[in-house]
Image (cartoon, rainbow, N blue to C red; front, side, top):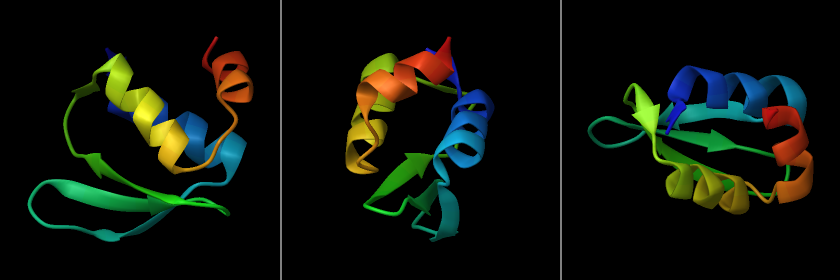
Length: 69
């Protein structure tokens, strides 16, 4: 599990991801230069979901892994 706040901090500061809009229920839409992802508003996000978000935003997984450490 990863804290949602930590994930968003990395995505926004390091990869230029921006909040786009509120989605239905407790979800938010974020956009990168090449893609978009719906992120659930909660305290922690499962690791598999985190990687799916990175993939949807079209972020290089190796680069993301470096920033995660």
